[in-house]
Amino acid sequence: MSAGLSVDGLRVRFRGEAADLFTIDTLTLAPGASLGIRGPSGAGKTTLFNCLAGIETPQAGRVAWQGEDIAALPEGARDRWRRRAVGLVFQDFHLVDGLDALANVLLPAHFGRWRPAADERERAATLLRRVGITSPRREVALMSRGERQRVAIARALLHRPPALLADEPTASLDPEHRAEVATLLTEAARETGASLVVFSHDLELLARLDRGAELRDGRLTEA
Image (cartoon, rainbow, N blue to C red):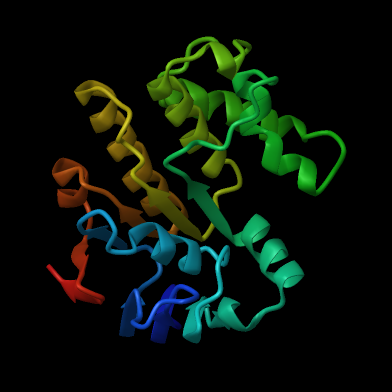
């Protein structure tokens, strides 16, 4: 079985800089396994998140999910891959304020059809309940940061993607909801066989994952 994630010779350097932000010689993660990545501010965690998600392209290297090198794909193909193969949880949520919680969770369904299917609507409502959102018709603009983060996590899980990437998914939550979200992410990955990569400073969340690594001084090392 091919690795869920395989990274080789990854190199990222910002334009105008004399040195690389980071280089990763090799990194593999089996399907269904989980990896937590921590590191100081400015180390490049969000940039690495974007490279693994196909949002940014590195200067060099291979980023392959299920054997498909997304770093080599043109932009349109990367966008299509991302919609079908990865669930993303961003630190800044990326919700649509004019929509309610249920509509935000269902946004990925609109890429494939005009109207979400009945089973998608049912799963969206179930996911919202699991993350503690009891009013699915409430506009997200009226929600707290913690509530908005939980809506974003439910959206990422809608289509049971084979890869889950989360950037500080518990940063805006109180201790009770941090534990609930950590459980949801890890259980969802196990249920679907997804590879889960979490970028976080939350030590309790990181302790739930199979492996840990630290991005520091331009290198990713197992922790």
